[in-house]
Length: 247
Image 1 (spheres, helix red, strand yellow):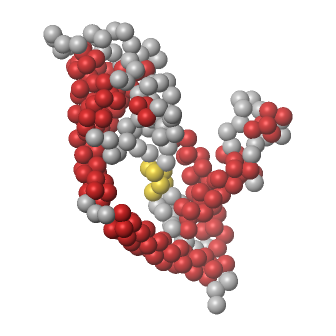
Image 2: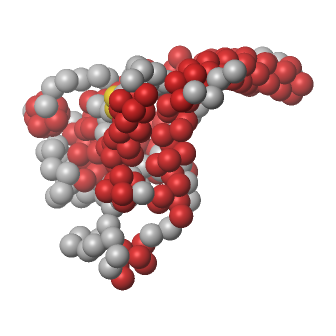
Image 3: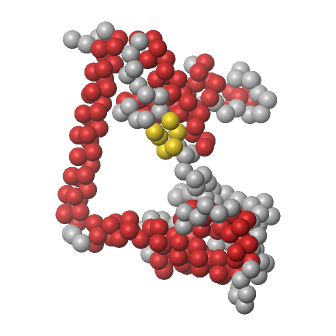
């Protein structure tokens, strides 16, 4: 419990027993890190894709792995390492100070992997920016909409240039509405990044009848279930042997 408590995000300056902290404490804050660690360690994952806000929970899983190995003098678990995408946070297209989310009530706020090129273009074209359409600067505080589009362009196009340099490139364009040029470039990059997975999705969803699609998807799930069950059984066998519960 002490290890879990050390990973909780509490109000600034508050102690675990303070009234402010207790008001925020829910069962999920305690059970979630445990369940997450169980999922990771059961399949002996070595790298786990997480957001920056989940790194502390992964650290809890690492602690369990290290403690188990040390206690039973066996290298059963490799402490999992976080895999953090370069695209750490993409903001909403309609409210660029908020994180892009699939639960947003506005479908225009996000890009889905099966969005058509035309729909991607419509969403990007309508993305909230500001009244200055003829200059591009990277300033997430003063110009969050423009900064968000630059970030999306960088990640979709795998462009390692500093965002300020990308902004400067568009700002140096002549005889063009620079924000429109930026939005067109973002549309091209996002569409190129998603077109293969979108094509595969459409192939599955459109090339067969409902029964065929269900059979295919169920077969993929069943194959994954068998692989997961085999891995879990192997892990639990090693764990039971290490703690003296085998046989």
